[in-house]
Amino acid sequence: LPTVAIVGRPNVGKSTLFNRLVGKKLALVDDRPGVTRDRREGDVNFGGLLFRIIDTAGLEEADAGSLLGRMRAQTEAAILEADVVLFVIDARAGVLPADQPFAEMVRRAGCPVILIANKAEGGVGLSGAYEAFSLGLGDPIPFSAEHGEGIGELHDALGEALPKPDADDDEDAEDPAGRALKVAIVGRPNAGKSTLINRMLGEDRLLVGPEAGITRDSISLDWEWRGRRIKLHDTAGMRRRARIDDKLEKLAVSDGLRAVRFAEVVVVLLDATIPFEKQDLTIVDLVESEGRAVVIGLNKWDLVADQPGLLKTLREDCTRLLPQVRGVAVVPLSGLAGEGIDRLMKAVTEAAEVWSRRVSTARINDWLSEATSRNPPPAVSGRRIKIRYATQVKSRPPHFALFGNQLDALPKSYTRYLVNGLREAFDLPGTPIRLSLRTSK
Ligand code: GDP
Image (cartoon, rainbow, N blue to C red; front, side, top):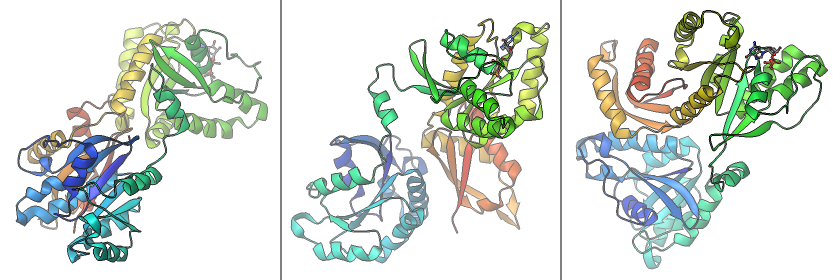
């Protein structure tokens, strides 16, 4: 779902707008004091527009001393996540200096903004609404969250501003088996990609071997595993084209990249009879930097004599050589014999699940205070680096943001400690994890 954030200074009516859109009064999910209760979220069906909405208004009950700093952190986090921002002002009060820092954050983020001049029921406060032009956030919509005025205009504006679901997802959404999971199988030439894909599809739709020379244009093959729809990237077809074009090296790289970008989960297929090579690591690096979930397939397992011994060695290699996708699933299989495909697909669907996981802000902050008290961030020129608050801003792959002071001075070893901690605490093996640092002055 796309995300919409409601932003504005205290008391402009953000909560009322939130309640009106969500359609019921939502209790605070977590009412312990502190940052974890600062936000409310809800899923909205607003006349056919589906989105997740974030409100930062829980803060308004916070004590005045810490209010603004926390409100800023909270607002920045919400804006970072948002596809569209609803910026609310009080039309009766007009534009106040207190609106400016929030407007500034929104302008800086550069995402679509809808400006709402609230409390303008029955035409009251129209001059305030016009003043709102001066914020540089576009035309204000005169609105009343309390009385439901301006709802039609807001609906139109949101319809314009929200990202359009792509045609593919649309079609998938109607399918009872759910959205198709996009999977690519990549690896060095002769690792056995085509053989494996043939075996999965259960028919000889791709030809294997050096004599094969058919060019195909389709990029994906539809398949089903245990009732789950899968789109497999057709790597083999591309390889054949590469041969024909006789530019193997160059195309292999760009085709690999294309396959990785197509996919949600990438199976890096190794030939288990050949030791790990730099090229294999380069492929995993590519998958990581493109932010895809990874599973390692050990192919040609039928040719391996000491299976337990080799599995142990290769698992250790993966732990040592691939720290960026720590905990990655390593699955022995034989495409030729059709063995281990079930295990592979189980690992693939699990990797997709981990990659899409969302962790609640409350849990992240519980973890953060534990992790930073066990191993506090170092001091930089006499001042302690302070991490105040953390939240997950995106999934696919999991992306977390930290807020605090002097975070740009955090040593790499410390961010690694945090990423490993997040991976452990929230069970996120085998996926890239992104971390953004937001320092407030
Ligand atoms: P690709 O370049 O990765 O698509 O590799 P291919 O699927 O064309 O396979 C390369 C060679 O390895 C072929 O001769 C296959 O028969 C062989 N091969 C593929 N998978 C296996 C396997 O699981 N076991 C064995 N023994 N041979 C395999």
